Amino acid sequence: MSEQQSQPMFSIEKIYVKDLSLEIPHAPQVFLDREQPEIDMQLHTEGKAIDDGYYETVLTVTVTAKAGEKTIFLVEAAQAGIFQIRNVPTEDLDPILGVACPNILFPYARETISDMVNRAGFPPVLLAPINFEALYMQRQQQANGQAPN
Image 1 (cartoon, rainbow, N blue to C red):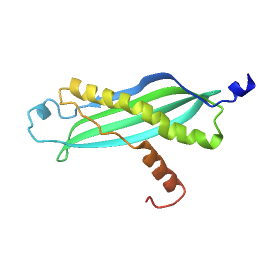
Image 2 (cartoon, rainbow, N blue to C red; image 1 turned 180 degrees about the vertical axis):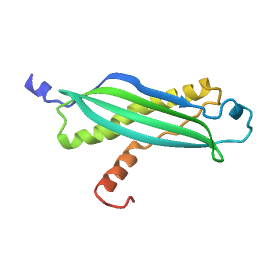
Image 3 (tube, rainbow, N blue to C red; image 1 turned 120 degrees about the horizontal axis):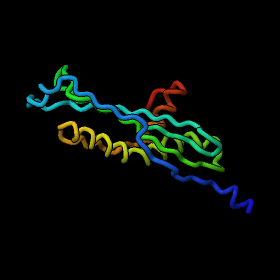
Image 4 (cartoon, rainbow, N blue to C red; image 1 turned 30 degrees about the horizontal axis):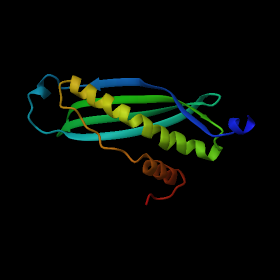
């Protein structure tokens, strides 16, 4: 029984949209424009303990579409998840919260962003897959004062 209790455990308890916003500052005129907008995406992840063995990871995705200096739309989704993580070495916890959990959350955030943009009257935005391991390593290097590779 004690051997089973000491086995590493990882499970998804809940996946949910924590915050969602959409702005179309120049509506309705932007719907008459024919210019192809430039799409910019920003990501932010944050993980924290919320209870004994339970952690919340929030992946915030911000997508901005601009035509020249004019913002066509801005959509931001904070996709969150509650994960049960037990019997994992402390040094492995940060990579789980910074890589594994965002990898699970990203497809949900991608769908939320695409759906919101489509409901706003624009063609859906299809976000490319993200290498969260590379982003995590880059953040670690920056935190340690090293230049990214």
